[in-house]
Length: 187
Image (tube, rainbow, N blue to C red; front, side):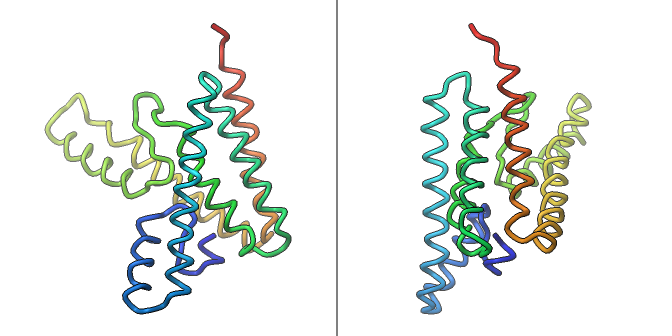
């Protein structure tokens, strides 16, 4: 999304909100409309994901992941144009936030890298004073590292395969959904 939009993101709403405000201040109404629309679509994705997650109960994670894969697959229906794929990409990023909130006791915000860096810094500072917390920063720096690696892989696959690069996350989401479904035990 970022490579297509140039200055906007499909999941970094702080940046898009800043761009929205700057474009309004500069009287760039078309750019402001695009930035504001992306923020709105993201929020719609979050709402849709949370509603479905609450309705899914124990099946929350596999249902959300399969739906996210389906939304990403819809982006492929836009043809060769990445710009036509932006709407489903933004919705999918909002939707993704309902997949998981905690992992092994670590709060996970799937699209908030700034928050991961804040938690990393806070935990690292805490580790200086609390010997029991000396490694509590590690999950957050790993989340940041995963995002940086993912962005690099995304840029490479986009440059190499265009819109068809979406097949990779679609397949990975489906595999992850299947794995999470297998772990669910009937009560």
